[in-house]
Length: 389
Image (cartoon, rainbow, N blue to C red):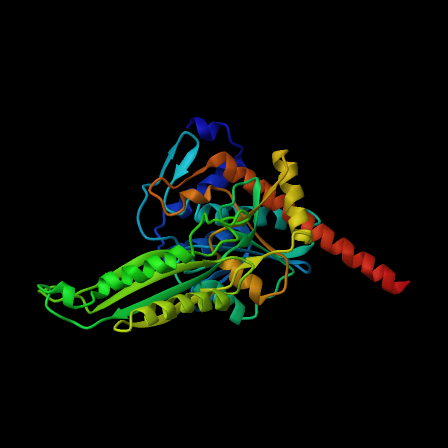
């Protein structure tokens, strides 16, 4: 109650909107309830709203130029975190990843779109399955979405702007050997052991920190063993095993270049173990992406952070991979990621967002939207004046 007494009416409404979002369980593939709630609330706020044929919620406020895309995701990873408010923090699954940023963007867009004299169109895209297949943002691309600027809502911290993400290769490797009785393990290769032995070779080639003095987490190729299965039991030496790897690709490489490096490791292992059969399958790839820091969007968002928080923005390059990679590669436009929350809390049982930071981020988003529209339209006026002369 003390928290509510200290907030203005618009701040209370913003926090209530977020807690309502957090109260709806929406793991990837099960976003229908939250989509319906968002569509209803955004209509009430004054957006033109529709739900597309895969479940993305698309809202528009304002008209004309520029078109500013604010994109966030409605889905979360599976697993419940009880919704509660304690000491100025809201705990819930999705509080930072990424309903907090999504709610902040919607509220800021409503406020900016209703600002007297605002010229421009704000497009809110609340997408599905970011945590799984990126189905939502891929669908936006196939539908030919157009914008002059784009901001993705993911936790960067209210004073930080994410300008780059590593790429990703999801790789499955099947290891096969001859079979035999488990009472004679010295006679046969064990597929599980061979699979792990192969993983050790890959891990050694993709270890951070390495001996390279200039290497950083963002510039290093890294690999993580995320799944390993095999064996039939019943006194049989495992003759087939499968490992799944999550390989992260730094900005100086393409996914194809890193894949070729992986294949060389497999080929060398195969040559050294002629009785072992290997088969690699790429399950998915996402290219690395980094925005040009001289873009007007980076400058506007940085100045908005400084104005609201009275401190300079920090530009981040992250080791994860996001929808910004996909849209950034597909569309030639200025694009960054920004949002409240600490990303190290993603997917944890302690996931929470500070109310103060959430409210600050709304102010930053709003300021950036107003400045972008003003800057874009002033450039158009100046260009027209030069043409007239």
